[in-house]
Image (tube, rainbow, N blue to C red; front, side):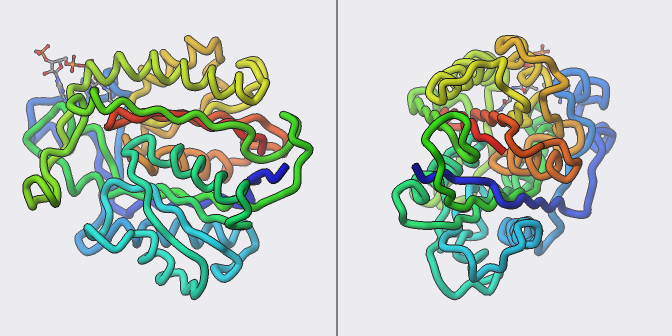
Length: 323
Ligand code: UT7
């Protein structure tokens, strides 16, 4: 069976770091509230003139270097983003040109904070079906561009950044001992779209709009749905929570991450955490966390890594892979 094995990771964070205290002068909020309710301490914001594709290209370059590859080695680029440079073309094509890649194909996937999980699953499908041997999968966002800076319930939560992973086809035995992606689990429920959405868009308003969220309702769905999707993906792979070496969750809120780990009976020393330094970077949060943990040398060949995310749509899902 063809398996999609991780060959390299990379990430990029914009230079500007904004501490929680920055919001104290703008809004009725405190560092203490943000820290205790979310676990967020700081986040990065892209500079004026710095776009989602710029972040994505920087992350991709690092992933290529670590994989010992050049852009021409790639067959496809999949970018997960809800904050594209332009309405069209796909940000992935801007990345493709930016990397100097003359062949293959590139497109975006939009599943908001679950975007990277959807993109990984999609890239795995490209590899399994033989449409591609090497796929660059990126999560890249500039959520600072869709913040309502007067809404303390949202604007303190999000940040900008990008992460990238290169997948390569490898022949496996078809068992859970194989390296690479072992199973994926994707879900959406459009009836829940009003819990988290952007109030502008091409067809409805002709504007970009601002992010709107009923945070406490999203919170409740998150813990329950994330633990359930993680259990399903492990079942599909023939594994149990006890087999997990690393959980790399979407980094929205430390309390959601802790609640999900508890439901999965997973000790926190097996959970990769970047939420304090990055805030919620939507589709970029998982590849950022993967790359940061990889840089720290956390993952050993053969480790079982589970990722899970939930966001607007609502859309949620998980991927289990063997490093
Ligand atoms: O990545 C996509 C998925 N998104 C998420 O996973 C986010 C999920 N939700 C959350 O992380 C949390 O719900 C929040 C961090 C957004 C909010 O935390 P919460 O504990 O659910 O608070 P809440 O919304 O129930 O609000 C509690 C209080 C409210 O005041 P009152 O009505 O009790 O007087 C809010 O107005 O906290 C207030 N509040 C704030 N206070 C100070 C909301 N935001 C702030 C703030 N500073 N920044």
